[in-house]
Structures are given as C-alpha cells and as structure tokens.
Image (cartoon, rainbow, N blue to C red; front, side, top):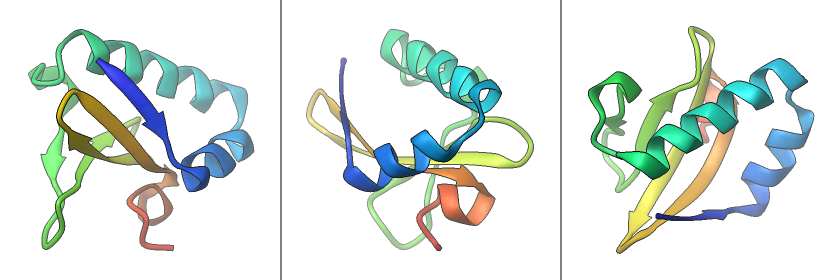
Amino acid sequence: MKFLRSNRFKRQYRKLDSGIQNKVKKILVFMADDLKDSSLKIKKMRGIEAWEVRIDYRYRMSFGIMGDVVVLYAVGMHDEGLGKK
C-alpha cells in the first residue's frame, strides 16, 4: 500500500512531539499491513468520503482511499487531526 501525504498533514506532523510522531509511524505500519485490522479502530467520518484513525486518546489522523493509495489529510489533537481546525 502506498501513502500520499497532503501538505497539511506534513505541516501538522512536523509540529507533533517525537512521541506522537512515533505513534503515527506505528499506525502507518499497521495500516500498510492490513487496513481492515480491527485494532486500528478506523471509522468513516460523517458526511464526507474520509476515514479517521485514533493515534491515542487525544490524537487523530484523517485519510482517504483512492484505489491502492491512502491519502493522509490531517493529524493532530482530536478536531485538528480530523481536519476540523
């Protein structure tokens, strides 16, 4: 599976502390292995063609799927990670 990072995702990722960045990297490894793994707790976002995944209790990441490419939209604290801020 291929990942494409939006400019927004790149900018937000750089602002995260190294501990959260490491958690994001681990999530991406799991996503690359099996996007349907229930441990990822991926859920569809309401009203748009996007998905969210929990990084931890406070952090989220949003993404879309285009064929075999996962487009990473946003990452950060809950609303920011869902692209709402």
